[in-house]
Image 1: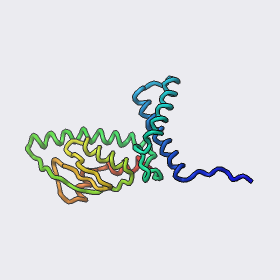
Image 2 (image 1 turned 120 degrees about the vertical axis):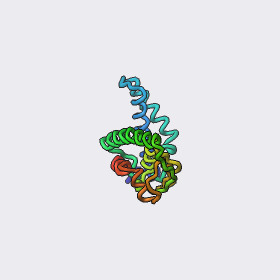
Image 3 (image 1 turned 180 degrees about the horizontal axis):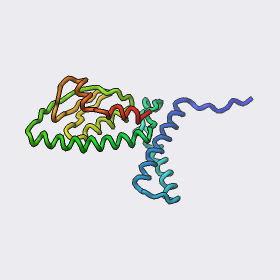
Image 4 (image 1 turned 60 degrees about the horizontal axis):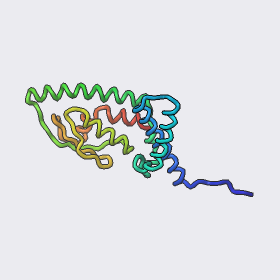
Amino acid sequence: MRVPFKMKASFKWKLVRILFTTVWLFGGWLLYTGSFEPVSLGLGVVASFLVAIATYDLFIAEHEAAKKGLLVRIHYGILYLLYLLAQMYLSSFAVLFNILRGNINPRIVHFRTRLHSDLARALLATSITLTPGTIAIDLQEDHLIVHWLDAKTTHSKYAGTLIKGKMETLLSRVFL
């Protein structure tokens, strides 16, 4: 009796990482080319797959391969982008008014995030930097260091709540 071929778990996760990387790269291909012609789609799949084989370690770390954090919920992603755009717009006016009034209180604040995925944490740090009046200086594991132009407090938990707003909650819903 012949024993069926069994894949090692590490090989399975490598295939999953290559597949996720291919899908993300192909999504980028579609965004940049904007073409749905068969030749363009075929070339995009082949190019995405070849780049994914060569670089999947750069996109998805081995310790993240088994996490569900690589999957996203598109509808929450769109909601997150709309929320981020609104926060960027509102914060720009708040910063402008505070600077014109001379009412600024710059501080460096430290706080933690509850996000588990490296990608979600990086998106949070980037979103904080995109929001006027705050700049993410450092991100290590779940610890963020942020320069806050108009600091209301230096208490780390309260500062984190004010700076992150609903961004952290929405990002936790975006990534499964």
